[in-house]
Amino acid sequence: MGALLGGYFCIAIGKGEFMASVIPAHLTWNVAFGLAALVMTISLLTFTRTRHSMGPIGLSPLPSAQNRTWVWQDLAVYGGGLLAIPVIMMMVSNTIYTDYFMYIIGPFSLLYLFYEMSKSSVSEVKKLIAGLFFIFFSVVFWSIFEQAGGSLSLFAAKHLDDKLLGFIHLDPNGVNNSANSAFVIAFAAIVGMIWLWLAKRRKEPNTVIKFGIGFLLLGIGYMLFFSGRFFADANGISSLDLFTFAYFAVTLGELCLSPIGLSIMTKLAPERLQGFMMGMWFLASAYGQYVAGLFGASISPEASASPLEKLNIYTQGYYDFAWYAIIAGLILILISPLIRKLMLEVK
Image (tube, rainbow, N blue to C red; front, side, top):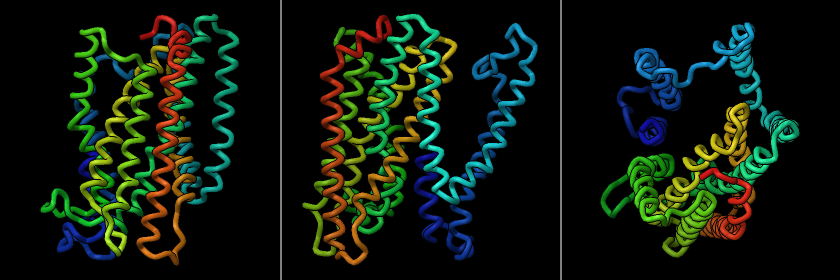
């Protein structure tokens, strides 16, 4: 709900299309991004009022450990979190530091995982290798999926009309920010029920096949983004309806991959490495977003190009991304028997 509402209201307030009579023109974007701080504070207050109803979920496991150093370990976690703030601010303000960080953190994490594998049983190693397959392919998935914050945002701002279903006037960038969240809210439970319905009939696809289906749906979504060139006018303005429907396909792809990936990481990892493997999964998401920026830059048109030429350059890039996704999905489906063997008893 926060992504749905915040994604749209941030744009509407920032552009002065909402609450313009209340917010001074020179402060619209300050207020738009300040909403994040406001609702995070509300979320924190909600958590502090309701956490006692959550039982032991999320509590540190350290107090129950045999040694007595857990207090200092807990403090080290909180201290490390605070120390990370200026580091992150530095990486945001100068992206060369982000490059350095990404060059280091991935190889370091893999080396540590290989070290842990050397202390693991054969069955644990097999399942961890299966987990690495999922992590690698998730990087590819997010590299394509996460164009929303880059090239698709620019595309929406300059190459879409503002009519949804012919009569609803919406800011195209607001749709770009919020369509994914709207479709997740609308269809997550339905997709879950479909898996349950298939499972009762012993027809539910395994995890690897679901990943492959997710890639194929992602590819279909980007083919729809590409097809926007066939609905454009002479000024390079295309259909918001088609753009939104493409997000529907992309979101279904995400629903075949993201929640299932979160689940499988905890099932494939031995208990002592569950937190680390979950961290690897989110690190893969970070690498996906990092590569997404490079992908988006690679299809950025020249400033001197005409609007129609820019639209064609963007959509040609989406055509290429669609094929990357489709090929990755087919590869996953083809190698699914190998990965299933590595997963052993994990379903």
